[in-house]
Amino acid sequence: MLPEKFKILSTKVLTKEHKQHFSTNLEIIAQDFISIEPIHFNFTPQTNDLIVFTSQNAVKAVTQKTSTIENDIVCVGEKTAKLIENQFQKKPKIIGNSSKQLAQEIIKAHYSSILFLSGNLRRDELPHILQSENIDFKEITVYKTISQPHTLFQHFDGMIFFSPSGVESYLKNNQFSKNTLIFAIGDTTADFIKQKGSECIISKKPTLESLIETVNYYFNNK
Image 1 (spheres, rainbow, N blue to C red):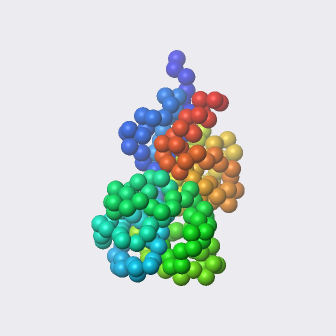
Image 2: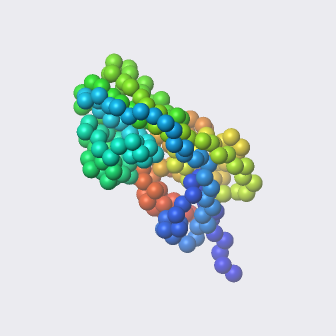
Image 3: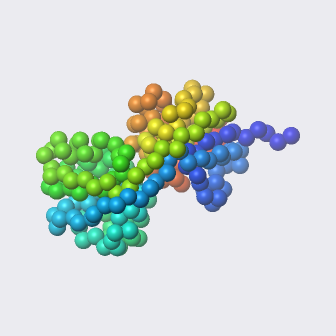
């Protein structure tokens, strides 16, 4: 008789290739708890604006408007940085691990004018930190995040979260269980999970590959 597998919920649908990187003792059940919708916006940055991206979704939205950005760019996450390089042929000046860290690095670099390209449900950390420093701060909403809550009736040994919006959508119809290991892809998502009353395990890097490695490690050492 084959040993029973650990059940893992991914709150985002994964590719077949990514699923194959999980250990064979894990059963991955994946559902999208949020969806992304395009919206109309105008993108006309001023010459001295620092362009700020905190998600790949924002980068993808802006590529529908332009293929070049002359301004300096900063971002959160290596995956977002790679997408920026591929789409705009420009390397970000700063790559932060979280919105909070990125804001602090922007202040250290003495940028005076910010254009933040975000989704409608973005977190407040980065705007609050930069505005408290009296930096000229502008923001354009470039995409819309739609909650897709699901009610879950089975027990999961682990759950994987990719964004605060995904956490919020999950909690609309469900609760965290003390018997379930919670995994977060980065500091921003982890901080939000903790605010909602649960401990969590953070991947070493804010990438899906690192998150999969983290999940595999914990369930191979249980």
